[in-house]
Image (tube, rainbow, N blue to C red; front, side, top):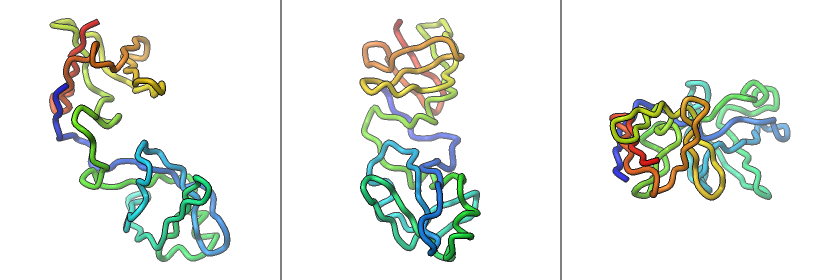
Length: 161
């Protein structure tokens, strides 16, 4: 598969804020990323377009808790509940050759030779391999034997069905 590095996506959602924990403004974070350790060493993050500096991140029994500078009470933490955490595209976790972000795949047009099959509307994570959902009703396995090339810049995926 070919790999292109540009995309229209400027910010990447990496998590969602859950409930406040304790009285000091600490927040439970629901990770929305496949990258283990994504929050380790993170110094700042955007919530609803506002940048927050991170005081600390704790992983307690597989649950992520984060404390933002300036969010020092349970009440101020509650105001952030259910908002998404985003990072700049340039701060995205690096990918291996032949790997792509889901948000880059969604919106790509699928072609089998000269025949347009449709547009990727979702990427299903099945465990063994991803599956491209095309126009909400066609499923195409993301296997090397099926997917011949992916061009993120052109938003085009070549397959052989």
